[in-house]
Length: 549
Image (cartoon, rainbow, N blue to C red; front, side, top):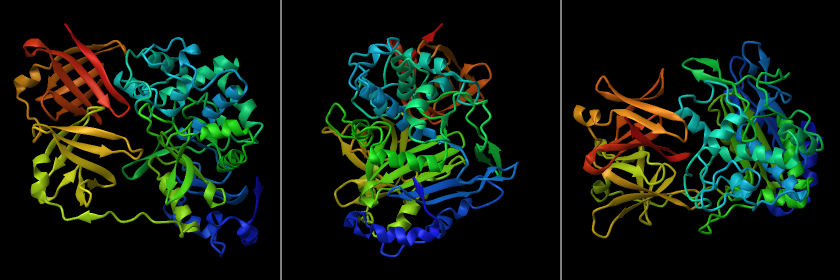
């Protein structure tokens, strides 16, 4: 990739003036350095973490710049040469490795994954290689599973063999294969092993020889050994009160994430995708969006999302691991504009920072129309007030009318002219069954899919001591190899997967609780005795544990 100084930007803009109208830049070449300085103002400091940013168009590097510190204690600033971690942006490289094996004739995307991974259980419909790469396999998320074991990421060393076993130990899926999209790193971790078995090479060696070295990505490698000393690597941080604390990913889990790289290498990578350097079939397959079994086309392709931003096509992916936050996007209709943002602060808005640059470079892009709202009738919506159970992962939501303001999970509700509602940016539809007995809220996802939440009761459950005591006991899950203990403590229920680890259960509706962002609910058998305890959250929909003596 060619690198131009800022002084040559106006010449580059003139050279592009013959491009199609949809791809033209504004007539006056913007001062991209000044734009970046403005967008990254909050991160331009010498006492905290920050971001590296790169921008290119049509293969010409327009900007590579650093803001903030790569090492606060060492007083080392972030520069374009600083190495940071990718988060899930790494998934497109794993998908590329698979597509290279497809091009070699060694496998097909629609092959049953069990052909190469026989340890994977049979769940009725076959899980294909394509399902693994598109988050449509139904596989449970490994990091949630180990957290329920009492060992969240960062509390002990997790290895590929560890996570491979817990993924393949699962007796059930979140849903029937291909029916839904549910983001899960598990598919990509299984894919790492698949690549090694099919290629006969270590995953890191294969990707280095077939992708990184041929494409000149000289600063890109995997975190296969987190103890390895990497010159130029930025430390990752998380804010704790008024100070920054180190927050590094201390495990050797790679393939779904775990890629060390620079903004310059990312810009080169995007240009190779644009030019189809690795082959048209390889690259085009990566941007072919997945279809669910009901025919719905989703945004996710192979390790990439394909969507629209302000009316223009973008091919992108975000990333977040420990204290790293990232975004890599390319905009084919904007003269093949590429933006790479790598930050070393947990929660840094890498996506918003990317869009801030795009907005400044292309103010002519269409703005979203204002919602067509109408007056909201409190009386009309009041019957829906209460606690709702999500029909997929069983977490709860609240439609509240406190102080005369309708709020859904804290976001003010607005009525739309078409009869639906807005809570923040979430579109909701309120329904009632024909007999009036069941009230639901249907939330529409960005892919056009929908999730139904059912009203369980108007007010949060306030259990008696006797009701809580009936839930006390031991519950076994063979899927994660844990026997949980539920006990009473200070008038509340406490859940423990192992000694020294406890979570408080907060009542929601009868026999159901929230805990650490997930749902816990109990199921009664004949006679009303408790026989099962279940867990659910967005990436693991329902795990059953059985009560044991």
